[in-house]
Amino acid sequence: MNMDKIKKQKRYQRLYQQLKKLLEKSNNPIANMATIVAVLHNKMEYFFWTGFYLLDNSELIVGPYQGSLACIKLKKDIGVCWEGINQQKTIIIDDVETFPGHIACDSRSKSEIVIPLKNLKGKIIGVLDVDSKVTNSFDEADADGLEKIIQLIF
Image: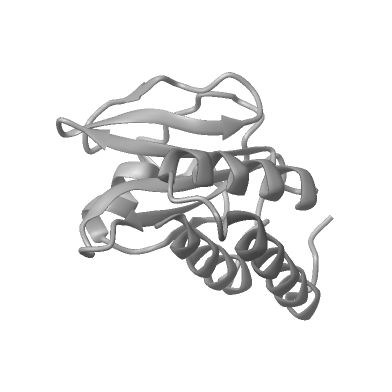
């Protein structure tokens, strides 16, 4: 199930080029998020849940996503998504069962990666959250690839 690093890097490069072309005529961030989620969720076979959580009055509210039903609102300062916002960096969790305060919207999720989403002014406005049904699914290749892809939103 786990893809090797070189294969992942090449896949992310192809997806970046595909998304860049798809999004070049769009200036709508929500439409761009929805397109990114659809492509990633359908092209990365180990992505079980793929979506955005967006800050709204200091609350994290679900945005465009694909996968099983999401938690609509995430309790402040609890869980991996808030960890990414509070630390202002990408967070990779190899086994969600070992993460204190993990929010299990779907108990089948076993590993997770969260990438802070910044607007053009560099302010964090939410996160890209990806879950996998398999532990140890995400690594630096995922972090680098996803960080680059979400820059296409704005």
